[in-house]
Length: 212
Ligand SMILES: NC(=O)c1ccc[n+]([C@@H]2O[C@H](COP(=O)([O-])OP(=O)(O)OC[C@H]3O[C@@H](n4cnc5c(N)ncnc54)[C@H](OP(=O)(O)O)[C@@H]3O)[C@@H](O)[C@H]2O)c1
Image (cartoon, rainbow, N blue to C red; front, side, top):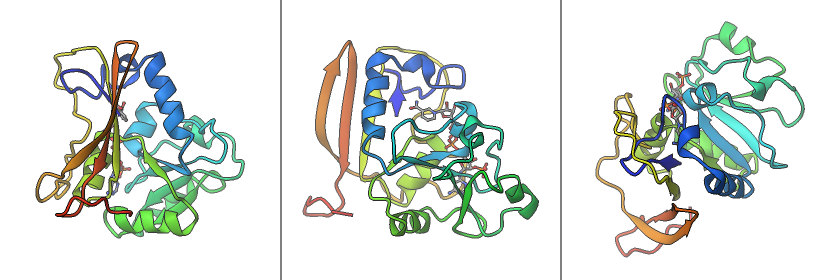
C-alpha cells in the first residue's frame, strides 16, 4: 500500500498520484514474490486491473456481490491461468455466468466471503505467497481476521488534506480487530525522498513470529 504523509490512500479516487518511480519499482519487486495477488473488487474496478506481468502470478479478486467489472482488461485475454474471483456460495448465478471462460470462481462463505477459508483454499491450490494489494475494505477484513503476516507501506512525500480513506478502513460490520494488532519493524528504506517500511505481524505473547 501507498499512503500520503497524512494517511490518505487515494487522490481523486485512485492511488496513482501517490506513487512514483521508486514506489512502482517496489510494487513490482513485491509482485515478483507473489503466487497470488489478492485485490478487492473496488480496487480492481477503480484501478482498471489487468493481468500481472510477473510470470506465475495469478490475480484473485474478492467480490462477494460480483460487482467486479467483467470488462476489465484482467478478463480480456482468457489464457491460462485464468484470474480467480473469490465470491460467496450465495452469489447470483446470472451474474456469475458473465465470467464464464474468463475467470475461475472460488466460493467461500455464504453471505460474505470467508477470507480465512479462501486463503486456505488458495494455499491448497499451491499459493505460498499471497500479496494483497488492497483496497482499504479488503485490508480491514483481513486485519479483522488476523490474516496479515506482513505490511509493506510506502509513505509518499505528499500531504493531501482530504477525507480519503486510510489504508485499512471498512464500512462492513465486524471488519475491525477485537483489539489493535501488534507489528514489529522489519526494515525501513529511504530512496528518492520516499520512505518504505515493512512491518511483520507479532502474534504470540512471547513475541515469537508465527510461521503461518
Ligand atoms: N493507496 C493504495 O496503496 C491503494 C491500494 C489499493 C486500492 N486503493 C484505492 O482504494 C479504493 C478502493 O478501496 P475500497 O476499500 O473501496 O475497495 P476494495 O477493498 O478494493 O474492495 C471492496 C470490495 O471487495 C469485496 N470484498 C472485500 N472483502 C469482502 C468480503 N469479506 N466478502 C465479500 N466481499 C468482499 C466487496 O466486493 P463486492 O461489492 O463485489 O461484494 C467490496 O465491495 C480505490 O480508490 C483504490 O484506488 C489504494
